[in-house]
Amino acid sequence: MIIVAAAAIILPLILLGGLNLSAIKGMSISAAVVVVLSYVFWQLPPAGSSILQSLHKALPILWILFGALLMLNSLRATGAIERINQGFQALSADMRLQVIVVAYLFGGLIEGVSGFGTPAMVTAPLLIALGFTPMAAVVLALVADSTPAAFGAVGTPLTVGLSNVTEKSAMLNLIGQRITQLDLLVGALMPALLIFILIWGFGPKQRRFQQWLAVLPWALVIGLVYTSVALMTATVISYEFVSIIAPFVTLVVAIVSLRYHWLLPASIQQEPWQLPTVAAKPATTTPVKMSLITAWLPYLIVVVLLLASRVYQPLKLWLTSHVNFSWLNILGYQTINSDWEFLYSPGTLLTVAALIGLLIQARSLKQAWPTAKKVGASMGNTAIALVVTLILVQVFTNSGLNQGQLPSMPMYIAKFVATYLAGIWLFMAPFLGQLGAFVTGSTTVSTLTFGQIQADIAANAHLNEPVVLAAQLIGAAAGNMICVHNIVAVSSVVGLEGQEGPILRQTILPGLAYAALIGVAGLVLSQFV
Image 1 (cartoon, rainbow, N blue to C red):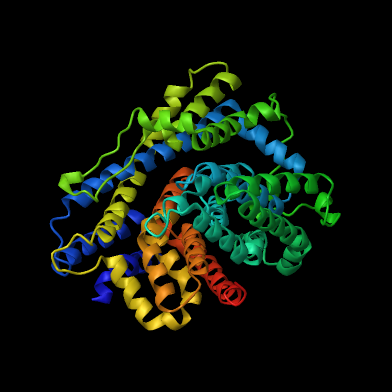
Image 2 (cartoon, rainbow, N blue to C red):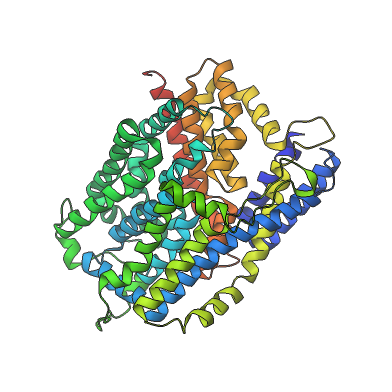
C-alpha cells in the first residue's frame, strides 16, 4: 500500500525527471494513475469534487502568472527592462553578483510580501534581460526562492501552516526563532550555492573553481548578513516580518558593497564574469531615455501594494471582503474548498502595477489590450499542465475522505516513514516537509498537511518539538525548488514549456542537499535547546 500512497511522488519523478516527458504528458499520466489507484485502493468517492477544486485552484495561479507576464511584456514595450538592465550593468556587469541581487535578494523581498510562487515568476525574466539563458534563469530563480519561503508572505507558513498544531503567538515566535537558528549557517551558504550552480552548471569549464573562489568571501558575507538579520528580527520583533526585513536590509548592504567593491577582487571591474553566450554579444551602448526610478517604479508599486495589503489590516479586510471568487464546500464536502480573494491576489496587484507603469512610462494605455491578448494566448499549454498537476495534488491531499477507513495518502506515507525512522527523525523531518511541498507546491500546505504528525512524532520520540517543526518548515521551503507546478509556471514565463524534466533534474540535488544540511543542523541544535 505504501507504493500506492507514494504514487503521486514516484510517478512525476520517473516521468519528468527520468523519462524527460513534458509536464502535460507526465503529469496527465501521473494524475490518471493516481485517480484510478485512489478509487480502487482508497475507495475514494468519484474524484469530481477534487477535479472541480483543481480547476478552480488553477485560476488564481494562472491569474498571478498573467499579472507577472503582463508586467514583463509591458516593461519590454516601454523600454523599462532595457533600462533596468543598464542599471544592473552599471552596478556590476558580473553575472555572479547579479544573480544574488536579483534572484536571491529582490526575489526574497517579493516572497516576503507575496508568496504564492510569485518571486521566481518575477525574477527569472529579469535574469534573462540581463543575458542569462532561459534554463539558467529558471533554475537559479527556483533555487533562490527557498530560504525566504520558510516565512513566506508575512509569516503565513507559520500562522496558517501550523494552525492545526498551535495558534499561540509565543509558540509561533519560538518556532520562528528556531527556523532562523537552524538556517543561520545553512541558509548563509545559499548565495555561494547559487553562484556555484551558475558557474558549474552553465558557465565555461575553464578555471571554474577559481571563478567561484574569487567571489566566495562576498557571497558568504551576504548570506550571513541575511541569516543574522533574520535571526535578530525573529528574536526582537516577530516572525511575521523576517522575510521582509532580512532581504531588504541585505539588499541595501549588497548594493553598497558593490558600489565600493568590498570583498571583491579588482579584476571583476575589468573582466566581469559572464555566460559565454552573453560575452559574445556586443554591449548595449544606446542609453534608454528613462530614469532608473521610473523603470523600476512598477516593481516598487508591486512591493508597496503587496506590503500594504498584507500588513495594514483595514485594507486587508476590505480587499478580502470584496470581489471574492472563493468556492467553499465543493459538491457538499466541507473540507474541499478553493480560495480566490480576487482583489487581494498578487495577480491583481501585479496587473494594477503594470497598468500604472504603462501610464507613467508610456503615458498611454494603448499597449495594454494588445499585450494582455498576447499574454493570454501564450498561457494555453501552461493552463493544461497546471490543471492536471493540481488534479494529482488535490486527489492526493483529499484522500482522507475515503470509504476504506484509511488515513489520507500523505498521512499514510508520514506514518510509514515515522515508524521506521523515528530514531533519526531530527535528520528526516525536513525531508518530509520537502516531500509535502514537492507534491502540493506550497510551504504552507505542506506544513498544514504534515505539521501535526511532525509534532506527534516529536512528542512520542521525546524530541524538541519547536526544532522539529522548524525543520519541517525549512524543508517545505526547500521544496519550492522542485515543486512541479512552480516549475510549470516559471517555465511558461520564459518560454521553456516542455522542459520541466531537465529543470527538475537541475534543482533536485540542491533541494536534497539543503534538506540534509538542515537535518544535521537540527541534530546539533537539539543538543543546546
